Length: 444
Ligand code: NAD
Image: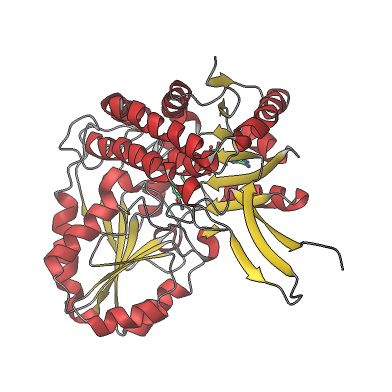
């Protein structure tokens, strides 16, 4: 039994879709309880391999081991959480305008679904897509990022060992071309994509051309706002951790911080201190907060963006080399500079000041992206204002923008995402279609 296969684009993708399409009806006919039971057993199997998986995450994508352990545990939690969602899924019922008719809305699986995932959460993101997709009764094809493929394989093994029927889940190794072939296949009814905004837009266009369902979770240039009444040392610690942890390679990483003008000097000093004290080193060392970045090209992009910038503080790197980016704090970059505008996906934090809360909110609300925003304050009035006026997929009050829960909805707005939310109790919505049934006992 193979859980994964190395595929050449198009023809082999087509064969994998054939197998998934053949397996889908049988899995759809299983009860939600039976499907959930497979996920529960897979969670147990994964839990037994959690340390192995954590080490694999670290070695595959250079994530600091403490974070990899948390991610492996999170993947287990996600499978357990989703396992009961199928049984909890209910229909809806109305009385019709025609007194003899009852109207029902029932949900069923969509068929074959494709999951396309990025490098940076090689276990958690595949898990939070595949778990609701399988529980809803679909056959699933997962196309992970190439460096994340071995971690996806561990998930596949846990599912197969838990008794998932052959063909219901398969990992397709390959790059963007394999992903594109999958997205183009007419038999793939739905595509859930997490990755860069540029690639996500191409996926959305391909899905729109043939009318497939699509869910997108994309990039973010996330901002934290620090008010003068906040606990400033704690806020600076949080913001630095959210900016530099895992070398800034989280979609929810903070890359801009807006500070109330009257405390901007103090907060910049606190951030500078946190920057130089960031522990940069070997990702297998439990003390490490920031390891190397995923690819050398990133280092060159960041160093070129930093040229000419007001760099307030930089951490030290343990060695020179193509994949090391020293965490950097920059002050007041130009609004059209990549430091302010682009998701660098690197340990770089830009700090600037603001004069009014509305101006700070406008910086967030007017951005093309809208994933996660932090707000540090002790004022409930300011939080109330944010509840009404801050337009961001996630708002974190007195918390870092990173490190979110697995059992609540997650997703971006504007350029950061599209489609129903991932995770949480409604995560099956994307992976199921609602059918409205008008039911009379007898024709008129
Ligand atoms: P990426 O866009 O390079 O790749 C993501 C996946 O898409 C990979 O599997 C890749 O092979 C595939 N792919 C690329 N082009 C494709 C195409 N045209 N058709 C089909 N598949 C294609 O992203 P990455 O570098 O692996 O990950 C980093 C990005 O992911 C960042 O922008 C980050 O913000 C984003 N991200 C978002 C979230 C979120 O939930 N919003 C979570 C994690 C990462």
